[in-house]
Length: 132
Image 1 (cartoon, rainbow, N blue to C red):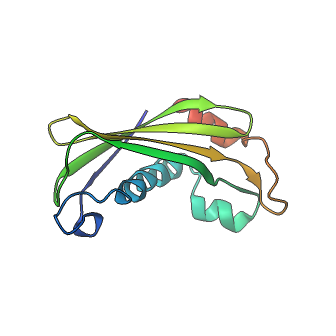
Image 2 (image 1 turned 135 degrees about the horizontal axis):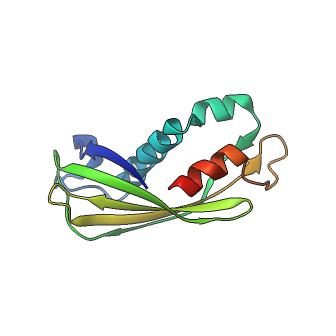
């Protein structure tokens, strides 16, 4: 499990001041990048090294409670599945009262950078994912 704290920012909302549906993916991706950084797996560095890529091939989100500008959020990441070349991360977004405001899920696949062929999850990444 990995925990990330943030709040709903103005640019995350629609004209009514509610969390805009696509913004949840930006927010969970920030949490994912923080998780990767915490295991010395900086996404920018990975891409600059040109060894592998981690594209998202599936994403979903379910809204449970409204969230507005300034609301505190805790994003909890857990790993549902680690396969040979792909992994699934679940996100639970809690509001300031620790109620589930949203859930999300992403599936990433590992591609060899130059050929774009599916490849095995690198060991360091596998270990980080298992720690979730």
